[in-house]
Length: 67
Image (tube, rainbow, N blue to C red):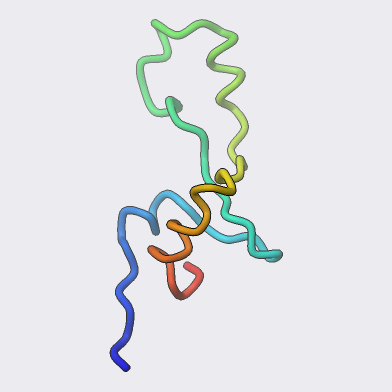
């Protein structure tokens, strides 16, 4: 059986918790803060959000070795 390749884009965006949940960071937190409201900026401060259950199966296929 050959080794499975890890999807590098998914590796940069997702990681696993100790219990096996898929952890992600929220979007819209990189640049252009001047044009965003303070409410939008504070909503994006949460760094540890979890991926949706419907997406989790696909993400786990892209990260076969638990990166």
